[in-house]
Length: 147
Image (tube, rainbow, N blue to C red; front, side, top):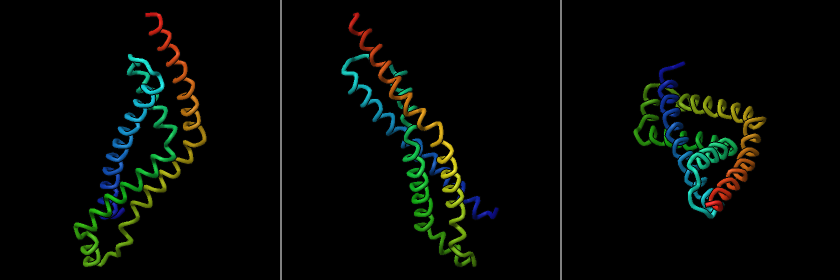
């Protein structure tokens, strides 16, 4: 692996990690709003919100992973273009297409991972999120009604 590939791959992975954290934060806020909006009661346990958020995050990986890869590539190669790194590559005699190899590797890895997850983990998480949300909301509602 060339030094150029390691450099772009490290930056791609850093941007991908930041994007997945941002996307999971958005999922947490949406799940919190959905859980609180569905229950129409006060005192929803934080554990319920976190569990529901985890299930939703896994069940929507078909959206999250491509968004993560696309955003990481846009940020990485946009910054490289703005900093003049592609001009430096041409000056050094390296074709700019060589810089795309890490993005293709990251995209291929995420595609294979997504293919594997769509067979088992994602449908299971989607089913468990629906079932456990209903059960937990009913238990929470019964507990509040007993007070």
